[in-house]
Length: 166
Ligand code: UDP
Image (cartoon, rainbow, N blue to C red; front, top):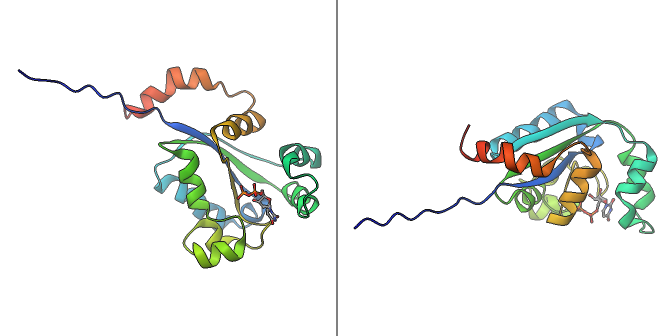
């Protein structure tokens, strides 16, 4: 008798990634980061370049209001173009955060020199990239950047085809 084990592959996870203004200002760096995204088998579900107004920056980083770096951060994030992505992959959230490396530049350089921030981070604020840190924040941040994105529809229509290799 032949037993067939039918294992349903796990659905791809989606996350919100940003190439911040410091990296977008340097085309070779933003291109290298984009290439890393592709090399690491992320699917680019959506992508767009945009410039924030200061109040966009304040709303996005509201949880950091009052911290010593808040003003510097909101100013920097609204200082020039950035590129936002919805990325899909297995364990997209943790994998992207691992590729980014630690928040602070000195930690990134010494503890994770091959990470994106380890290679290209300039300061603790100008640290090249952002990535959602949980399922909840991915949901919230994707809606912030891509309000027209219909997650339910994407999981019903597109995700199964991508996972099947179409
Ligand atoms: N940040 C900063 N100084 C700090 C810590 C954070 O300027 O000491 C900035 C930095 O740009 C960072 C962002 O605030 O990416 C959000 O901080 P968080 O702790 O959420 O780090 P992340 O999730 O980006 O690694």
